[in-house]
Image (cartoon, rainbow, N blue to C red; front, side, top):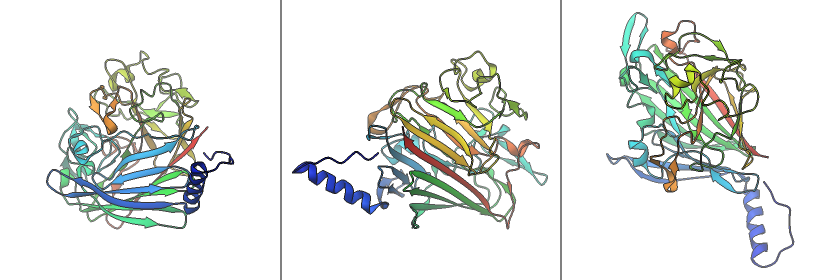
Length: 382
């Protein structure tokens, strides 16, 4: 947010001139080394900036959104995504902070699916199920990167070839993910993929957001609106039952602005499935926008800092998760501790376990077809 001009002299005048010069420069980008993996593979960091103080940092390990600096109503910027200061934190971490998820985001029942009469098995890494593509999904791979630029944005395009049989999935899959930052305070994520054999695919970004700043308490007072009149109920292992249930008269009703913590401890069996001790949200909401990226899907704001996040997506669903498994033992960036309910996710997606749910939208990708997905995160302060 720009401050009104003041007549200053000396150092103050220099500061104003520097700020104006930065604003005139508009969008900028740089990249540099970000350490190495345990096996010595170099990891790069790409930093995207606009003239309004928004800064997005992406690393090639895991296609991860490592940092997102967003100004509040006081003009002060905070990093609003959880994560780590080095590659080793992400290598050893199990929370998927900021990661590109694949091949299959969310859960597959029993880690298995059938395609054209053939059975495929993905390693189980979430009780009886597989989660986010198995233990060595896209979040644990080093991607290739190329800076991008248009008249409206600066960005980076990440590419990864997932070979036939990786984590049990069929087909050589070429995946491309582009992060783009605009002067309109929008961070856009565009996905594209193709395969040489029939396969299933469900890509997403797993950023954990705390609009007050990562590590600055919990998100229970932050206010969410999810433009979704239905959700997909789950069983005790968080696999959808196949039903599309109304959110009305349940704690899952965020059709009007609602504090995240208002109903998080409600006595409802679904909340107990998501977090058995205290309750929590970890469900797929069926978006009313039905894949129209021009329609608002979610809107979350922090009353204290004024930061606001608006989500637009071409996907039919979004997983709203409240960091139920954060237990106050994870030390993140700048040594900050990430508490229980210390963040929320907005994972745009097809529905969980879709290959095993005939009534859900299909996640099948065939040779000659191109998978595409677009996500827009728009930031403001009020």
